[in-house]
Each structure stands twice: as structure tokens, then as C-alpha cells.
Image 1: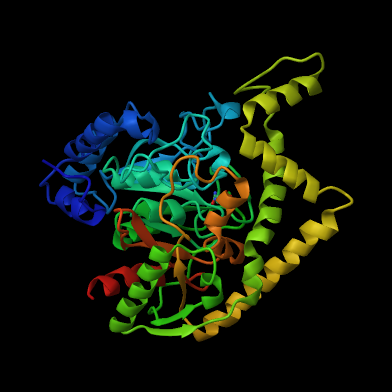
Image 2 (image 1 turned 180 degrees about the vertical axis):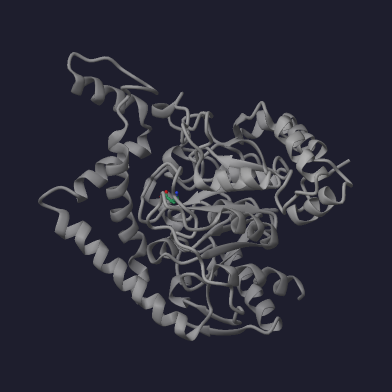
Length: 465
Ligand code: GLN
């Protein structure tokens, strides 16, 4: 019996290439877990009917000794990443029956490597949220405790890996959406340097912040996925190739000012324990100061909704998704958009439209960009002195459904993660043990832009102690 809850991509890949297991067996094991628990946890919006066929194709590649690291490995895909011919809804009614006409760059790369795309995972509508409660298709439940959220917005992808329904997954991270659910579900979630993975075929939320990132059981697995999907793509002018990996340093900086308020006691205690472990592993620790970063959330909640309102203006119910008739075309748009978008999406479209409006543009939007620039600059300086900035991934462990029904409270979930998006930094959430009630903790390491590969070695160093 293959236990996909513990098996890593690295190990499974070895076994596949040596012929000890087949991709068909591996995918079947994931499908069994899906069969068993998806009804309860609502992780997959769709399990692909050709998963076993894909597995057979991978087995053929493996027999012909054309197997790569991801050949035959079942991967789950967030419902905002395009797979040709498949529905891709961003968990929104307005894209209910929309089918992708091409593959996202990351999907092209996965297909070429022979990975098996097992299904599309639930998420907060258009990736707006931190709990997966904003899906038009019902919330996803945390595999560790089904009375709690899996985090979000890539909650389905994180939960799929934790529940052994896939060995790895793709998510998207605009303000923390890969790392925070990674932390809540006890898996690794990595946000690449902005541009290191092409946005071609990622449904746009906030284009200056969005990036696709991997979720997996450990750093090595996350690195395998990241290395497959990254690279410069002519279809995304902001995409880049990373320079060759240089040796990772061991200097860690902690912005202590951030930890003073609003962080759970248990999270803090776990954080301090981890700092001790790092010291034992030969890391040096020092305090760093990031005075502008205390405005990160405020800046994020101006720039992000501005881009959201622009990006989502193209959705009108005319050709697919929820459509309501009206007497004029504008009435039809208005009614379709009101019915097709959920409450959080409508809130952000309104906020974004407001900050971009003629009278307020300079006061909010231009100002926010100036502060964003200052945040980038202060990180650049900090990374002359340290190799990593370290905080907990989130101020709490997984919370209960409905517990953060006040939007501002929900927004605070991203307090530690958004700075990396604003500054374009690579950033990784590593599992860091469990709370007294058995809920996973996460540790967040961020590095200077382009230093993505330096993030993947920390977990191994930590595990030695
Ligand atoms: N939770 C954040 C938000 O609601 C981040 C979302 C994301 O990264 N896609 O905007």
C-alpha cells in the first residue's frame, strides 16, 4: 500500500524511476483518499476524469527511461490556473462554466515533465481571502481539524497535500495565499520572486503582486516543483530567469517590532523555540528594523483592490458564467456582476474603484506606490546585513469557520506575508510543529529578490537539531 500522506515527491520519483511503483498505483492511492474525504473536506472542485490516462502516459515515459523528477507525480492545481479545455472558475459564479483555451506556462512545464494533473482545487473567489470561506462552491475544511479553515486563498491546494490527495500542488500568492494556507495545513508553501514564474495563464487578481508558487510536504519537494515551473516566458513581459544559485548564508534578521502586538502566545512561544533551533544549527540572529513595513497592509489594501477592480472589469456575464437579463446592455452587466461576484469581491471592486477615482487617485493610489517603493528600499538595505528575514507565517493557527467574519480581522491574517509581495521577495513558510490542540505552526523566511534557491536548505538545517 502506498501512503501518499507521508510519501514525498523525491522518494516517489525515485521509486517510479526504479520501477518499484507505477504512476497508476500512485495516482490511484491519491484518488482513494479523495474518494474517502473530499465529500467532507470539499478540497477538489473537480477531479479530472483522465487522471489515470495521464498516469499511464507517464508510466510509458518511465519505461522508456524518459522519466524526470516529476514524471508520474500527482499534482493538484488551484482553480485560477488555466489548463487547456478544462473549466477554470476561480471559485466564482461569474466564471462558472468558463473553459480555458490554452495552458498556463506553469501547466505547460508540468505537462512536459510528465506530471499528472489530478484535479482543480477550491479557493477563495478570485484568490481574495485567507480562509477559503469566500468560495462560491462552499468552504474547504482543514484536514487536521474539520471545524477549522485551511487558510487561503489556496486552501484547497494546501489541504490536498496535507490529506495525501496529491503529492504537490500549485497555488497563487498575491498577499500570502500560498504561505498562509501552507502554515495552517502543516505543509511547505513557497512564494517565488515576482516574475520568477510566468503569470501567463494565471487568472489575474493583482498583476503587480501575483505569482504562482508550489505547495508540498517539504522544501526539497517544493524546490522540485518550483524548478520545473519557473523561467522566462515571452507571454509575460515581467517574467525572468533566475541567476544560478549561490551559496545560502546563515544570517537571520528578526523585525521584533512586528511581534509586539496581535500575535497568539503559543505562536510566539513556538517562534522563540525555532529561533533557538536556528542558533544551534549555526545561524546568527539579529534584530532588524523595517519601519515602513508597518504600513504594508495599508498599502496592500490600496494597490491590490485598485488592480482587482481593473482586472475584473472585463467580466460581464455576456459570454459565460452567471448572466441576468436587463432592459439595456448596461443593466444586464450590472445585474450579472451583482449576482456573479460574491460579497468580498464586490467590496474590493468598490474599494479599488474608489482609490482610482479622479479626486482620490493621488491621495491614495500614488501615495501607496511611494510607500511601496520605500518598503522595497528598506528591504534592500536589510538584505545587505542579513540573508533572511524571519517571522511567524501568521499571527495564529487555523481558526474556526466564521470566526473572522469582520473583513478587517481577516485582513490581519496577512500581516507577516504581504511585505514579500509588495517588495517582490521570495518567501517560504516552513512547518514548525504543532500547538497544544494539534494545529500546525508555520515559520516564514524571506530573502532578497532572485535568491529563491537559498530558501530551500533551511528546513534541512533545522531538522538536524
Ligand atoms: N489573504 C490575502 C487577501 O485576501 C491574500 C490573497 C492572496 O494572496 N491571493 O488578499
